[in-house]
Length: 116
Length: 113
Image (cartoon, rainbow over all chains, first blue to last red; front, side, top):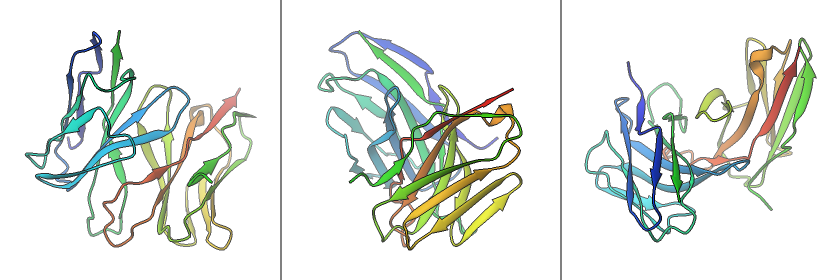
């Protein structure tokens, strides 16, 4: 089945530790995105990548880093510099396609990160 | 002014009712529009795309009003399973299509038996 996977579903870390969240897609999508969602809030863009080996900062990139070495994978590292890392992290991907579905994004199931 | 604004709700409606949500966007260059559905503690899922004058999918109808810069979602014959948060989403860059979407904070719907 095609889709986007994120692991783990729940992650607990101590303050001061870096942590890397996994995101893999087998949809052959060119673009991938990382969002953060806090309780009762909308999605905020952290980073996005339109092509392998290239990525751009989103609205809240400080304290995060990414890499895009393969089309299928877009891991996100939450560094110790991120002041409030506890949140629900969502990865998404999209493709131009030929069916007119410009801009449609498909999300993974998310990772709930708790830092204490 | 926020880029995409929605009434947060909650909208509490009985089963079988018709309910409508509006969403306004600030950037007149916005090119494509979407409604996503998000269940509690789950990821958003694409509900409908709204590319031109609107479209219908079963009990769901989405409309776009470019002059007034808003889109709407109408749900007819509400079911308990329609209870969720509905996110209004806007894409500004048409040519690329792969630029980030702008998400509203969502409108919460609760359908009551």
